[in-house]
Length: 292
Image (cartoon, one colour):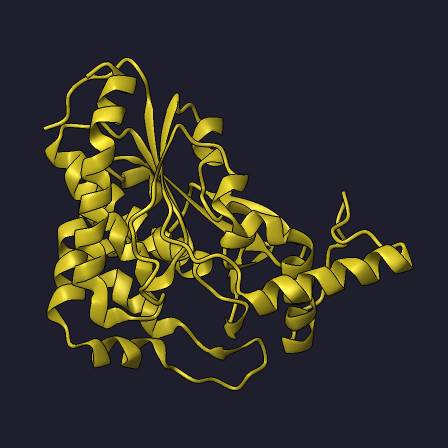
């Protein structure tokens, strides 16, 4: 049972694919300790966990992750398509979240919910807080080149981690006084960092800006070549955004899951347990900050 805090509390859940399930353990401890969470934001893998929490369906998601055989999830994920915009459709993934979130909209959630994504037309961040939640979760988790992007009005959306690895800023912008950030991400690989350095060096030599202040907006339908180019541009220009320290927060909870891979569905129970352990260590600090 939550207690009352004079501060409006937000919870920001990072990307991480299956590693994001560690946030389930964090939320369990926050609930058990009576930490009041007024709003929640998620990006990429964290979007599904945030949506399940905001709609009151977190226990059902946890049960599904821990009860189903790991091969069932690869059958959900591995849905090949003609690679016009990505290698996988992602429709089964969307149907998976429909089991828990059904057709709920942002207007019906028990807690305010914000989900972030990247608009591939303008190469700019997008925060979703209206419309169908399942569609928003689907859009936020779409890894460029792997899953086909999602149309959202006049935008074409994919992985929100490019601009909001930890989606704390939207919480502050919508009135949060205190943000608990949960980081389950993996830092960029050595090859990604090297590629970004090469990209930035070439841009300096040619005089091009990595990301324009007013980015070029593509109005045509994006094909796989356009998407690959924009993925390279995003990663090369914006690699600093793929580190947790680029984002504001009041307290950071980092479960010790460095040894676990983002795609390792067989380790979900361990991830949840490590999320609980990290949250338990943070509770005294949080209670002190909130005057609880």
